[in-house]
Amino acid sequence: MKDLTSIYKDRVIHENLNLKVYKGEILAIVGGSGTGKTTLLKELILLKVPKQGCILFEGKKIDSSNINHMRNKIGVMFQSAALFNSLNVGENIVYVIRKKHKIDYELAREMAIVKIKLAGLGESAYWLYPSELSGGMKKKAALARALATDPKVLFLDEPTSGLDPISADEFDKTIKKLSKILGITVIMITHNVPSFLIADRIAIIANKSIIFCDTPDKITSVDNPWVKELLSTTIGKRFLHGN
Ligand SMILES: Nc1ncnc2c1ncn2[C@@H]1O[C@H](COP(=O)(O)OP(=O)(O)OP(=O)(O)O)[C@@H](O)[C@H]1O
Ligand SMILES: [Mg+2]
Image (tube, rainbow, N blue to C red):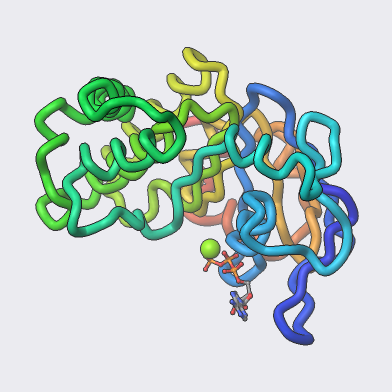
């Protein structure tokens, strides 16, 4: 992202924001509620056009000539799981696969089962409807759908919010494993301090910009009231002391 300025009507959300994401890394984007994390994600996945500045992908500025090239390489898990309620988990994934690849239903079904397993669900989850899933399973189903098209870059918006600590930890481990095994680049918006542990770098968004982007161990150097408050919580202290 280069010199990004984002607005809603006349309200400025980001101003000259710059951020680099490296191939294969897990980057956590953190910041207070309303600082514009989801807005940034929407711009990154080309759902919202920034007022100024640009997005570069594989070193090239995204424009109408290469927008589909990028779209084909990304997977997104939205803040709410956003599955189609009238389709079961498997059909949700098959739908995405067949939108991209012109393949027969049976093959798409086999592929969907692989994604379901990669996301840490059992094969039986294929037949369940979103209303029949627990919160944790819903997140995994959404992850399986985000993986449907074999993305090179995976965007996750608060993937562990609302999960109990054990499920959140399990989800984080799945992400780490996927990034390692498949070499996927992960951009993860999170409030969950334990998730910092799987991140290669943390980007902090405050005052309309990225005020810090470095390895997790450097976070203590950040002079920002929200960060200090976050690190003074019980869970923040545990993170700092490595337990
Ligand atoms: N479509 C929209 N129209 C107008 N204002 C919006 C719109 N979407 C978001 N906003 C405003 O932009 C600001 C940033 O919102 P955003 O959803 O990006 O925050 P966030 O950092 O993701 O917050 P959270 O941690 O609560 O998810 C908020 O003040 C929000 O009210
Ligand atoms: Mg958000």
